[in-house]
Structure formats: C-alpha cells, structure tokens
Image (tube, rainbow, N blue to C red):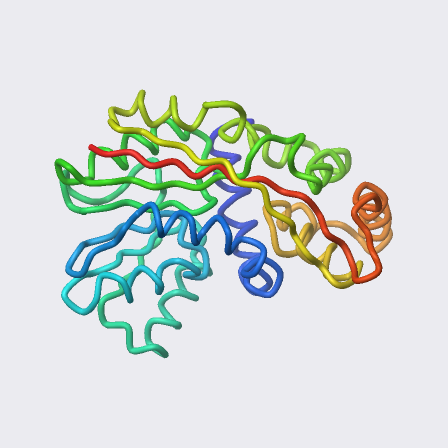
Length: 271
C-alpha cells in the first residue's frame, strides 16, 4: 500500500475508533502495557515521549511514575486520540502531560530531547517502522531508552482473520504488514538497525476475553485498525463480516464468552 494512503487509513481509522477503544481494549492490552512499563523502569524527573499514545492508557501511568518534576509528551496520528488525552489531562489536572498531533516517522522535536521513548502497540501500523525507530533514536538523549510493544506472530493471534475478512470487502489492504514486526526477531533487528544497543525482547502469550458476540465484534471492527473501512460498510456487509469473523473465532468460544489467544512482543533498547 502507498505510504500516504496507509497514513490516511490509520489517521482517520483511529479517529473513528477513538470512542470505542478503551471500552474494548483497555483490559485486553494491559499485559503488554504492564510489561512495557516494567521494562522502561521510569524514574522521577524523567522526560518521556509516548508515541501512538491512543487515549493515554500508558501516558498517565508514565506521568505518575516520573512525578511533577518529570514530563510526558504524548503524540498520535489521530487528532481525536490526541484530543482525548488532552481532555483527560485537564480532568486529572495532570500538569506534567502534554499532547500533540504528530507523525511518528517525522517527529517535530530536537535531537536528544527525551530520556525515554515508549510506543505501546502502535509501531506495526506505521508505513515505515524503520524510519520511526531511527526517529526515536534521534530524539533520545545519549543513554536514553526505548521500549516498544507490538502484536506477535499471526499464527499466535486468534483474531487475525479480521484483516482478510475486511480486505475482501475493500479495494486495498487495511494493514498489510501488521504481523511483520512480531514475527521472529524482526522488531529486535529493526531497533539494532536504528542504532540501539543492549536490545532485549520478551514474547508473552495472552488471552483476549469478550463476554458476548457483540463485544467481540465491537473490538474487532469498531474499536480497532479496520474502523475506517468498517464505517463505510452498509448494514448487510456489516452483518456478513460479523458472521464470518464470529465463525473464525468460534473455536475460542466457551460458556462465559470468547477467550481468544494472542501474543505480544515487547522490546527494549538503549541509545
């Protein structure tokens, strides 16, 4: 897919997903986010860049860790995600949090601006993750750290059929390289190529729990990366796509809902 088109799909898709994101994903993403923050080992007074911040699921946890003497700058390609963080910052009176709309492949910060850069489950959406990794390296101070989390290998993610199901109903692939960074050591190699040292990777298994078919479909279609394409489906197309997706996750249905396997890859590096 053309890079400009991919950015447009992600930008406006996550605008569409922003109001559903926490409802369907906050609990499911917590294992990856907790490991990312543990590996980051944030310290009071540090300056943090949170790339692809979404609604701020790790932004405000990071802000608590660095304290009032530290600062967290949250960026996202989705203006509605950024607006959500800004609104939450005001409600929480989080004076050590700022947010900005920004492309992760072209960060508008001087060299050596931050102590640590975080990217929780955003890097696999970027058209050129290698360029973004090099930008993360550039804006870090010498000795600064980076920690990123991505989804793992396709065969380890039971919800992965969402992409071919949607792609069959649109003219272009929604997220063609989604699982690439989580396959084998691709994320580690990407960080090393960007210049990071002491690169370490952890791969963890998880279960995505959804109580009802409506919740499972809400997460997959309205609250995730296919939201822009989904918003253009008519009712008949939506019903067909829902039925096909539910059939694909039927093996993970139990008495208490759906328990869908997933995998995360979390990688650390140092400048």
